[in-house]
Length: 379
Length: 148
Image 1 (cartoon, each protein chain N blue to C red):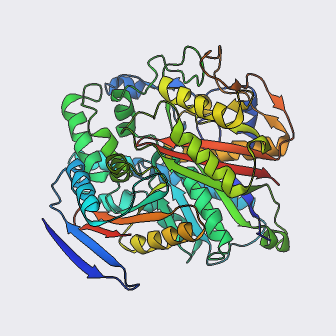
Image 2: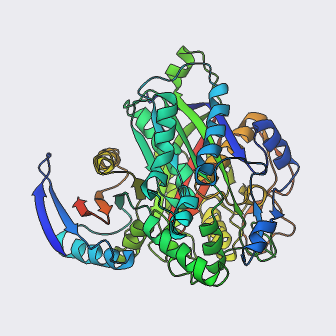
Image 3: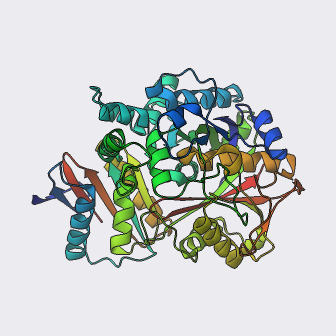
């Protein structure tokens, strides 16, 4: 029988909060970390609202490492067993430490190769003295799901005995300018996924880390089991550099691939943590795909209105949200929703929904047409 | 620009294409796509996965993009380069150009990552998740290698 892959510890750092209880309480209350930033106004950005971690005293060039370090420390504090030397490290990031690339563009002499997203996996390995394989996923805004899903696959194959998986992205001025100029950013400074008046995304920053083990090992070591990682489904739109395929066919393929791998029917999924970037095209394509796979009554919530779009960290943070919901039996409402768009053909959650779920789906997509769907099971 | 072929240890043929580092990534993508069409008999569809290992990770484009921001201001710079600042720029471009709709994976690191990706591809093939895999090393200073 296939050994289940389970999550035994987790930690995060976000603009909404930096402890699991604080973040969960704010999500249940529908709070958002969005605020206007004077420095962005002064630097001439078109929009100055974002979700940034306040009072972060990290050096600018290592802000991502700092965020990741906090999430890692928090996860390790909740780990009851020592990690084996062959623990694998799986971290996703969209931009790497992009402040270093900005500094290089400004004429500073800097070895930029030390600041790509592999710098995050190196950091984790060196800090913990790990000698297992490391995987730095440069799969943009779906990278957290990739990292968690491939960590589970490597564990299932027996190549490693534990995994640290997650995602990180520090606030990036390159991303802020790029998404603004790509017309993806909300001009009113609100990310209202699936809402009739949604106008785009908000940029955020953060990190999330999960510790994964095989269930038998976790039980033998007395570890607390928080959830299981059941399957990862992936696909590509092969459609456009920045726009999603409008019918969500690629998203549907990723979801069906995950269901097939988990050997679950669509009815087994209690609800979906949606990508919900708040852009008109992406939310609509996602809802079409979800409705085709699950029917229009499927419950959906998205949290980028609370955290901002944390890019490579997003699906890792949202995986933690899924696990907190599974643990508490409460699904937090979709952030910032006021009036659902009539074209969004799924049941977007407006208020806390109490339900003891067995399986949930965490969806995340990325520029370039990457689609990911991660199935997470209860402990 | 030259093309070199060599055997790799499992007997498969890796094709390595060497580029001028100054060549825009967009052109590199187009050239790789052309060579793939010419030299492989794979069907590019939803059952084929694309695995790209790279040490560039969009950094070269990020630096150029931000130089433009410094010159013109972040509110006025052209958006064309932005997708290339992301590490998955080459992989997503190749999926579009070739119509590859299966899993699309980019790993960042030095050339050892190429070996890791081949192992990942074999695992995905053996598990029946995909029917074919294209694995590439894209290091703009050093070239591109293909394994399929």
